Length: 303
Image 1 (cartoon, helix red, strand yellow):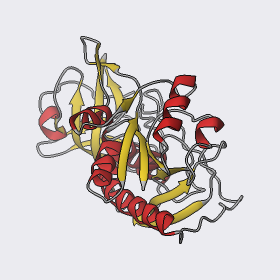
Image 2 (spheres, helix red, strand yellow):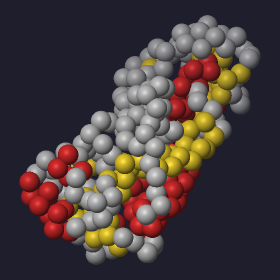
Image 3 (cartoon, one colour):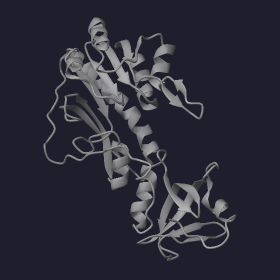
């Protein structure tokens, strides 16, 4: 089947690799324009654009609203357009081009967690189960009919670890749906109207730890924000990223007060205690929290 792939970040590039290894014909790639990266602000192509260029594919970086893009997509005559984390809204004129539609890989069990950060929001909320949904895109955000869903336990993983697992699951599920579409056996079921939750992007401001909250909620927040935007707190005038932590019963400390010991670093919360495992102080690389704590002096109060 002739397909035009749409995607931008690393997770999408991994899925594109699976499509390139399949019998389906990838006729081109739609991705976001080159974006500044690093201190130099040099424009760098997306991971999908780089892979597509290396694979000799045509790369389209035009705005989804640009009439030139619509004209070129029509010329390419794709039968289906798989989408993974493209990062932009598609107008109805584009949605109408492929006979089989635009088929999205979404990393949640829809209708739960519609939006840009479904994995992070599932971890943050303490969901025991998440997964992948393959659905046909409609104008309303992540509301289209679903071809298939695959469940995956969260199992205490960070957002990064969970997304890595879901990427492989999603690529395999997408290929099955594309095969079924080509064979004429695919069936999409409308999403229920109940149980809809939204998953907006996690901001840096949201990633700040509020030590008055229970330790179990803060531990989930830390995992949800790993690898980005990274949970953080302030110690004196220094911002410290908290990359990993676990909930412990002892010692009992006041919320926000730290206790550095030889092999452990504890911080009190509104309910329970967090044992910090890995931190990244401002301007420094990630390190064991206990090693960092041995170099600190005076009252350790986080805020």
